[in-house]
Length: 157
Image (tube, rainbow, N blue to C red; front, top):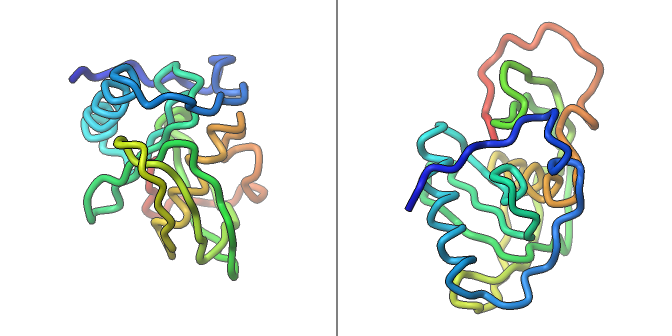
């Protein structure tokens, strides 16, 4: 495992669409392992492959209950809405309010290639949505509400 460089907002790779993972091979497993180590080292709660320079539809989250890996994640359903403060490992020193679904249902593959579905609420739902946005070339700064005094606690994804 290795800690990879986290790309920042001026890097054009963060604005590109990620490609579907067609084959879960050793390179994808190494990517997942490196992403876990990188996210942990940066004290993040989520990380997307484009943030470490790889245009593949791979994300991870850890909101305090352990790492979850998602390959080719898709949001199937959303429910409600929640406005919260977000930050991003790729946009250091910036935070802002973003409206996200309160609850989501997603499907994805795990590192063994097995499809799973799960429901997520609150912070986990927010983290998953934030990371999926990265796969589509969207940064939280693109969708955040107009700036105010956002000096509250911030979760970085």
